Image (cartoon, rainbow, N blue to C red):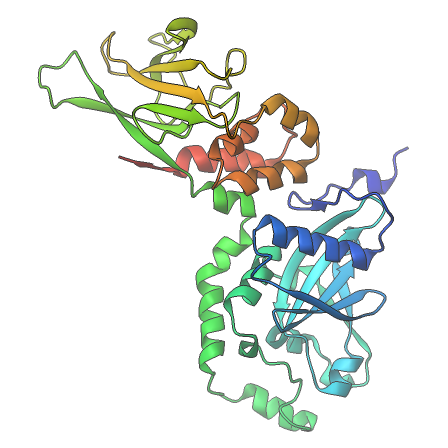
Length: 390
């Protein structure tokens, strides 16, 4: 009979750490935090300073933000935080990041963020001597991206840290808390930032970045029409087309993606047809199409000929492709290296979306990628929401 743990699914955005030595939960969180910062190319923007940690809580300074990381297991629905020092020192953390940790398999999931103002709602002032509080995970919002945006975009003074403004009694505190207090400019900015960026921060990183990819509209003269100005448009999303001449491709097996249905598609190598597909009246050609022939070879010119629906028999658009000798990844080798680790696939796709979109799209639509709801959704976002530029 399998253990209950074996049946527990990890959230899609969990981070699997590829490390050899044994780390405890606190060290795993630091490794995952550093990896998240590195993958988002924010190492020069965000500095970490560890100053104190207890058995289940880790205290850090992130760009001067007093940040506490509350650790729990993947089975837990809440985190337990020590409030004794908060009351004693009259100082709250500015931010709390909830982290689920599986220290046997080196997996970390950042469950969400709370600010100091939100934490106050969970302090039991009627039982002020209580040493700990429990906060359900459902009250934490966003993920690691919300935390990094806070510490990157806000001034550290924008989130107050005091439990009491002074050494007030409980009744005085309630009066202040319920009074209409004028917000500082920085706090107003923090609220505005959360309102504007909140929805995007709550999305998995892959969905928000993949939607930034743009396609290219290609004009195709329609020989069936009499007017010279009557042309068809077809939008290509992959491979990434920069110009109308030769396009240098960075992967040996690019995926073929068009927003429109096609009547015919051909692939030529040095002007010799090596693959073709024709539609019927009942079945038009839908993409994406994984690279249908042997991988692209260097020093050869490939021609992709496409003919959209409602076009005449000879109304083809030619797209010329050639390997980029300076940057050229072999997809089969990369797929084997990534294996079935969903986190590695997602990180690799995210990391290359801006600088090497052909690689990201080839991996996203790879037939060998692991099953992933996030990557499935990202495919739909790319096809349905990407803009096409003239």
